[in-house]
Structures are given as structure tokens and as C-alpha cells.
Image (cartoon, rainbow, N blue to C red; front, top):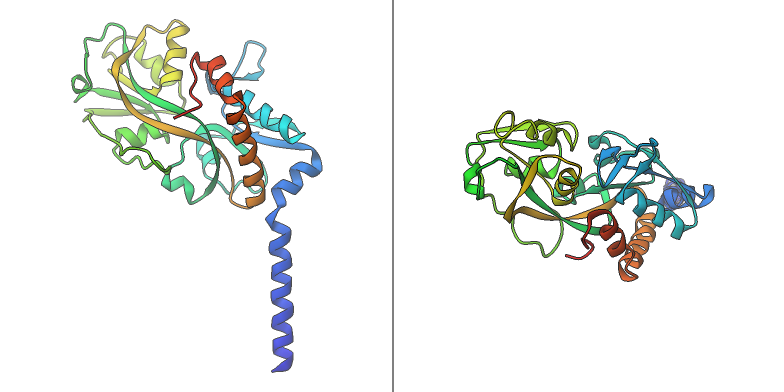
Length: 275
């Protein structure tokens, strides 16, 4: 029996050692290499996209670079599909996700929410020739959304944002058909063809819609009504609370000193850093 207790004690001590060693694995890896890998998007202007020189640019890219600068490390980018980015279990392939991710209850089970870094209103986007004047005019219509996003969750009435203090989601639309797209710009490409030709409306972030209009898409935003408003978070794999805490503190610094206000204004034309 004494020998059994001794073995159990050794086993517990070994487990404690392993747990302690794993607790800071991302933080140790990043600070040891002086480099971090950020998972993001490559086709979501102005959040993140490839410019004419095939360089990855945008709001999320600038945020990532600022986080890296404050940590004293270099940054590189990977662009996995959305389900991989938000699904966790990265197995060390990425150190952070900076992709304008909404903190939902489902995602909270598989990824850490490092910190809210801005807020985004979602809008109803119409062709410029649309006669719709209210959300009610879109009942029974063809609505386009990017797949596996909060836009799709909203139009299917299953959106659950995991953040304190937010008002409940109001569902005011009964679509006739929901059409999903693999990329954030593809719904706009179908809508621009003509009012009702392929789509009657798109639900998307306000900044994405305004950027499309700025770039010549013959669209307009339905005035006076947001679909919903959401916080956006930097995310991390659920393996290292020390890393989550350290980057979270950096994000708070960027809020306090006005950096996030400046970056949202640079890319979106207005300050989205505060609720």
C-alpha cells in the first residue's frame, strides 16, 4: 500500500509538471522564437485582403502588426478557411486569430476570446434600384449571406453572441430563400447584377458594404435599421491562459491610447472601437 501511495504521488507530481509546462506553451513559443503566426482572411476588404502588389493589407492586418510590435516579435500570416480559423484545435499552427470573429456561445466552447477590439453593425444591403424602404419589404425575398458567419446565423434565427451587456437579438425578417456564399464579396457580386435578378438583399457588416459601394458596386444600405450589432474579438487556441492574458492586456492598451480608434477610422472612415 505504501508503495502504491508513493507511485500515486509521483504520478500526481508528474502530471502537475506537465500541466505547468503546457500552461505557457504558446507564450513560450512566441517569445522564444520572437515570431508569431496570425490566422486571418485573404478576401474580406477592408478587414483583410490582397492588394495590387499581392500583399496582405487591411484593418485586421494592421491590428496584428501592432500587437506584434508591442510584444516585440515578428508577425507572419496564414489564411485558413473560416471554419478552421474559428474552430480551434490549431495544434500550434497559428498563435492568434485576427479575423473579425464574433464571440458566439458555440465558439466559446472551442476557442479563447482574447479581447474585444472593435464593434460592427450589420446592415441590409440592397441594389440601388431596389424599391424596398423597410425591413418588412424584404419578407419573402432572396437574401444572401456568407456561409458559417453570424450573418447566416442571424438570417436562420440561431445567433447567440457571447458577450455581456448586449441587447437581445431581434428577428424582423422572414426570408423566402437564403442563399449562402463561401466568400464575403460573392453575395455583393450577385446583388450587383440587378435588383431581384439573383438576390434581393445581402446582410453584411456595414464597413464591408460601404467599402463595396466605395469601389463602384451599384448598391445602397437600407437606412435607419441595423440587422444587429456585434463585438469582434481576437481569438486564441484553448491551451494557454497566460498567452490569452498577455495579448488581452495589449488590446486594452491599444483601446486606451486611441490606437484602435485610429485604425478603425483609417480603414472604415469612422471610429468603431467603442460600443
